[in-house]
Image (tube, rainbow, N blue to C red; front, top):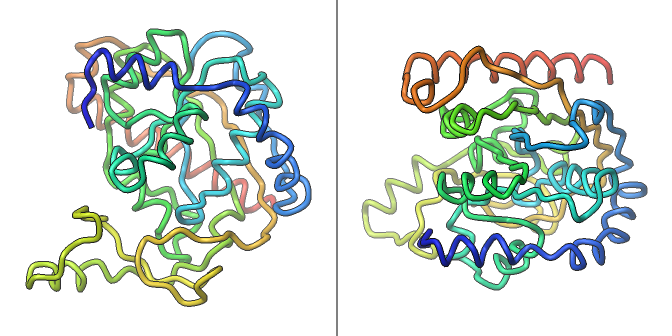
Length: 275
C-alpha cells in the first residue's frame, strides 16, 4: 500500500481510543481467566516520552502475548497515550476489513515512513521484527529469539534517538504446537505452477497442531489454547551513539542488532528458568 502524506495522516488518525476502551473488558477476561497472565517489568517504561517497543512474536497468527501486552499497556497508561504497532502491509491486501479494525487499535503498515511519522507525533512504536518467521518458529525453538536478520528497527531507533524496550514472554508459543516448516516444498510447487494464496509469498508454511483445525498446514489463523502466559518488559537498551550517520554505518547497525538479540535471549533464558 502507498505511504503518501495523505495516507499516513489517515492511518495515524484512524486510531480510536473509545474503540480500544470498548475491548478492554473482553481482553481483561482473557487476561485473567483464559491465559492467567503474570507480568513484570513495567516500571522500565517511562510515564512520558517515546520509546521503541521491540517484541518477540509467539503463538502463530493469534500472537496472544502481543494482545495481552497491549492490554497491559492500556490499563497502565490509558487508551489516550499514543502508541502505534507496525503490522505487515500484506494485512491490508489480504483483508481490508480486518486491517481497518486493526487501524482503530493503532496498527500502521510496517514502513519506515509510517514509523517515523508516528514518532513525529510523540508516539511510541511497537514492532515485532521477526514477523512470520518468529511467530511460526518450530516448537523446539520456542525459547529462542528469531528476528530473521531484520535490522530496520535498529535504524529506526538510531534515527529517532529513542531507547529500545524489549518485550518477551513464556507460554504463548505453547498455545499451538508448530511441528515444522514445509515452505521449501511448497515453494517448489509454486515454481511449477501452484499459485500463492492472495498472490502473496508467505515466507513460511508451517505444520502445526492447534485449534480449530487439529493438524494444520500453512500460516492460517488459529484459536490459541488456554495456556498460562508470563510476559516481561525488560530494561531499556541505549546505544552509544545515535543519528543519521549511525544508522548508515552498517557495521554499527549490525553490532546494535547483535546486542539487542543477545540481551533479549539472555532475558528470555532467565524468564524460562524462573518458571
